[in-house]
Every structure is written in structure tokens, then in C-alpha cells.
Image 1 (cartoon, rainbow, N blue to C red):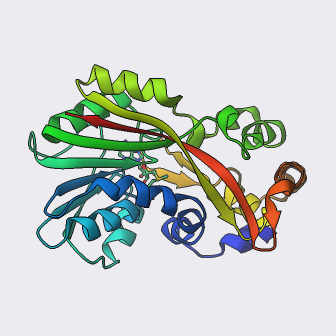
Image 2 (cartoon, protein in one colour; image 1 turned 45 degrees about the vertical axis):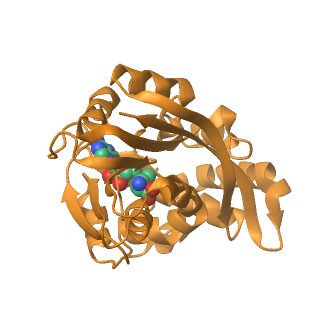
Image 3 (cartoon, rainbow, N blue to C red; image 1 turned 120 degrees about the vertical axis):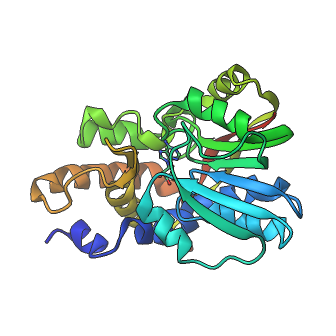
Length: 277
Ligand SMILES: C[S@@+](CC[C@H](N)C(=O)[O-])C[C@H]1O[C@@H](n2cnc3c(N)ncnc32)[C@H](O)[C@@H]1O
């Protein structure tokens, strides 16, 4: 068995996601996105995954509020259902953003954290967001900035394309297209943009090696069936070992300035938008 196959072991996609991506990269951005939720709000967490943003929204909405977590990937939703979150009751519903089973004007706030780059039709998803928001309701969304705009991790895209294969570019997580694309699809859906901002916060991993392992074994991408899948290569296939070693060498070179006694901590950029219905 290869070292990376051993690293993954029998762990499910949701376990890997919650163990590595959430604390290293997603948590600090997700908490910020939920900050505008007020007591009593009815909130939709679109592309909720394992429930990270829904949990923060429930704590803020309190017992008078209601939260719906909505996502097409059953394995992630099952992990969300198994958790207990304080505050508002959370209902977990399976489905895609392009067509949502909610009434017009049902929500005060829709949140979508690192999900819009994975939907297969962003225009219809945005139109659905507009439809399910009350008049005056708010949509807060975050999508990672593209690789060339990433202050520390920009090398990832070129290094993967060079060593693993050209089809790795653009990296799915970085593929959205920036603030102007957020504005374009929001305005096309009839939303009024109130804030467009690139936010920088640190991504933290125990080491460069841990970052490489997570990037190769646990990078997310949308499958043919519209669900999230993980991993860039067949981890059991030893033919990939030289390519993975070459990517590891590039990562050590690029990330050396960000390694300290507590591991790797390097700035990462997310494009955020707040828009009103
Ligand atoms: C990187 S995860 C983000 C999960 C969560 N928001 C978080 O911050 O931890 C991307 C999510 O987008 C979801 N997704 C993919 N395609 C989607 C679609 N068409 N509609 C809604 N969500 C989708 C995936 O299932 C996955 O849970």
C-alpha cells in the first residue's frame, strides 16, 4: 500500500473533510460568513457540506430561529445529521442549488460558503437564491480567489498541472472567476450587490507534508453525478509516486517562508459578496 493510501485508510470523505480541510482552511472563513445572522432569523446554508456554516448560523439565530442545511452529497449530509449544534433547530435536506424545494421568500438570509464554484449552473442557482429570499433578505457568499491571486498557494495550480496532469488546471476549488463574476451573476438574478471584498485569512497545516497529503488525497471536485468527490489520483497506484514527490518538492520550495515552530500558516484569499434581494 502506498503512503497516501495508508494516510486515507478506511476514513470516509466526510471524516477527511472534517479532520483536515475544516480546521486548516474553512473554519475561520465560515465563521465570518455567518456573522450577520441575527436571533430569530430563518437561514438557508446552501452547499452546507458537513454543516460547518449551518452550525455557526444556528448558534446566532438561537432557539427562535430556524436553519436549513441543503447539499447534494449524501455522505456529507449524513455527517452533518450526526452532529449536534446548539441554538436553532437545523433541518438537513438533500438537493442541488439549481432547483430548490423551498417556497418563494422563505428565508431572511442565504449563506453559501465555498459552494458556488462546484455548482453545475451558477446562473440558475443564483436565480433560486433570489427566489427563496424575502424582499430585503441577504445573500452572503464566499469563493476562493483564483490561483494567480493567491498570495502563498498560487503555485499549487501550476505544480499540479506540471506534475500530475494539465487537466488539473484550474484547480476546482479556485475555479470560480473572481469578484466581477460574483457581481455579474448576482445582478443577472436581480440581487443588489452591497459588498464585494477579497478577504485574507491564514490556512494552517501541521506541516508542508500534511498540506501536500491533503491536497492530493482530499481535494474536492464535482463528480459526473453532481456530488462532491475527493482525491486527484489513484492513491494505490505506485506509478504516481514520482509525480507526487515532484509536487512535494515544489510545495516545500514555495511554502518555506511560511513554516514556523507551529507548522505551516500562510495567507489565503477568498472573494466574498453580500447582496440584497
Ligand atoms: C468545499 S464544500 C463546502 C461545504 C461547506 N459549505 C463548508 O464550508 O464546509 C463544497 C460543497 O458544495 C456542494 N455542491 C456541489 N455541487 C452542488 C450543487 N449543484 N448545489 C449545491 N451544492 C453543491 C458539495 O456537495 C459540497 O458539500
